[in-house]
Image 1: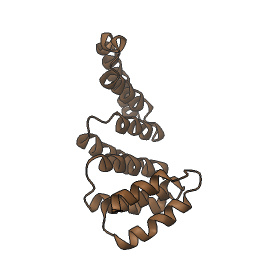
Image 2: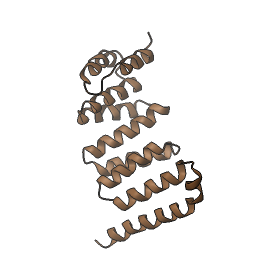
Image 3: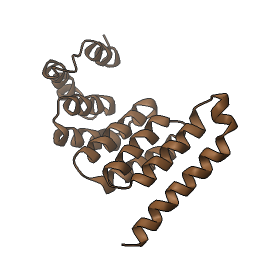
Length: 169
């Protein structure tokens, strides 16, 4: 079995409530392939799911530095940015999401998790504005299409409220 198939097998068998067996299965793969971007990413994800966010950060950073690509890169950005947010690193989280959304503008999930970061950082107007823009851009319903100009106009207005609030301080 090749490395990719082994990683797929390990994650198909994981129990999100009991991540230690998954971590234990990944450790020998990490020892054998310490610079493999996907192994690093999967290690980070396993530790993250297990609630070991500090440990996960290092693996996410190594995976990014090792040249993770494609869908795995998009997932890593999302998980890394979320982990930073969970650890109270809002500025770093916003930087990760900004880079991620530039690299993957077609991913609404990145925008949703970026909005969660804005909300956690107390930037609630920015969070709501971003969610409205995501709805306008990614929900292909006739009602949304009909009201798209109003939705995006309201997003801009709500975003401006946040900038007015921050300029008052």
